[in-house]
Amino acid sequence: MRLQWQKDKTDLAAARDLKDTGAVDRLLHRMKSTFSSLGPDHSVYKVIISKGRLIHNGERIVAENCNDFIEEIDSLINKTLKEDAKN
Image (cartoon, rainbow, N blue to C red):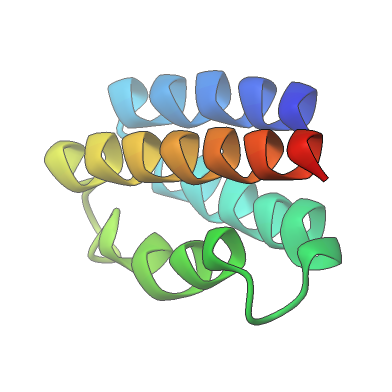
């Protein structure tokens, strides 16, 4: 999961820089699939579903929202992996 997120994060930042809304949509779809194994009530999955659509408004990418999204997912994944390591 961590390796896939690292790839997705890099790809998402590149799509943001290129202003490629189609790539953002594909990445969000892939991320939903990657993290669906955590369950629909897991915080990472909820953020992808609820905030992913804020990254672009259909025509342009909102860079600040994209950056916030990446930081939030990063934080949640790190927290999740630390909790899993303790158990």
